[in-house]
Length: 413
Image (spheres, rainbow, N blue to C red):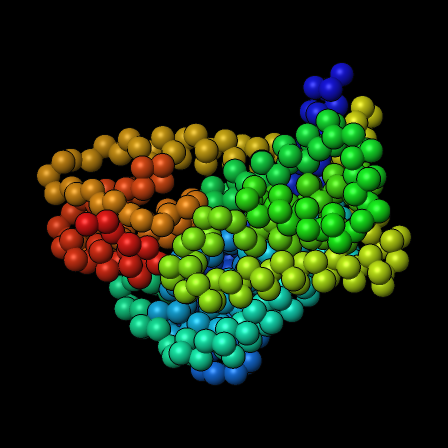
């Protein structure tokens, strides 16, 4: 039965990944609360490769998707980062993250988990260095970010900071990448069940052609760094080489049409072209190196979850983690959305703004937090589907416009 096969493949992959995904989300929350963004931005200004390398190293552990990283990079740019450092950050961040590295180890093995951040670092340094060389005007620092625009956790006790970190990791981060994670799991299960082995066998004889085909598919479809892992696993199990699967791991999360359009407006066309080129070239180059120089035995999937279609066993801890992750996904997709649409607020001093450029829940959360930090704001609701921000309180429209602009977006007039 194909439906039973599909469900077993989906459930087995989810069970393999869920403990590591939850751990990664918690670490993401700790980074968000305990690491001051101003500390990062102070190291990202100036010329040369040093800020470019620092930006890549700072971006690699952050679990942000390619559209969610855009407002962060814009904010860093305005805090003093050079355009080269911002480009390096943009390349490195969506390709990896503490959550995706842990999940890569669990499902694809240690070699993939080690090579993935190394490839992200190389691609980021190459891309950022190219921007520094070809666009020297971008080395100047951006506009400084005002004190009121930063979310400040310094006044909280350690316990309150931990609560904020858990909430950010298990609620905000799940809301940001949860949809793409589910899409990745479903695509992996569909590939495992419905795509015949002969299709991939034909491509396996032409690795470079197969890698370019993966790039052509990965960029428009878009999946987050964690969601790309089960897809890569299903490709390996269907007969494709580890190098081809690696291209999916790197190219899929780093570039999509929405982020390219937004990036061209904020960084310029030249920097955008370098960004996309660095992602594609680095992914293909490392894919070829993996297939040519490294033993294939290193890349046997650690779990092989998708292979066991009808005889899957589930451990208690893994199953509990999967249930918890599923519950968090349901909460962020249903209950939290309901709350954002049905605040019981008065209509006295409420105004709605049209926000341009938001592409995911992380974008929505960034705009919401920037506006909420303004003096006089009673409540703020940012709705992603309608691209609107509804603000209640005695706050000037100019202040709202500036806050949205500092978050990396614009208010339509």
